[in-house]
Amino acid sequence: MTQTITQTQLNIPAHAMQRTQVYLPYNILEQVKEIAYNEEASMASIIRKIIGQGLSKKKLRQKKDICNLLKELSVKGNKNTPTDLSANHDKYLYGYEHN
Image (cartoon, rainbow, N blue to C red; front, side, top):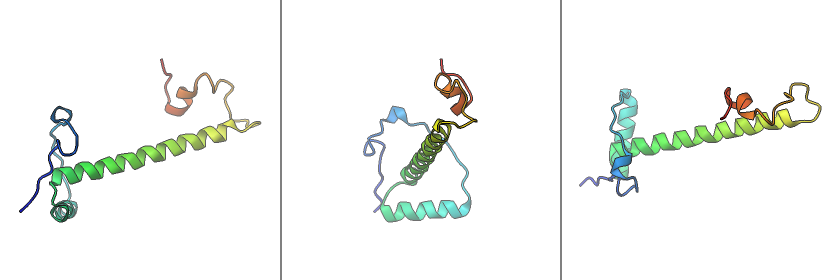
């Protein structure tokens, strides 16, 4: 008997979900099916979980990159440090000015 995990069980309101379709290589699809079977979960919930974990890791790496850049630029005497860094940090970090 297969148990299906619904968005309610994941504490995700139905109105916060968007149906979409993706093409997956056969080998990835088979891995997702196996995980879903072993965890007695839906393939959709497994895919959401994996994507969420990947995005969290990517965001963490970006934060670390930004922190390292700021540390490098904050070193006294660094000739590469812009004189207006404090006022225009968004421009230097993200390529645009924050309004």
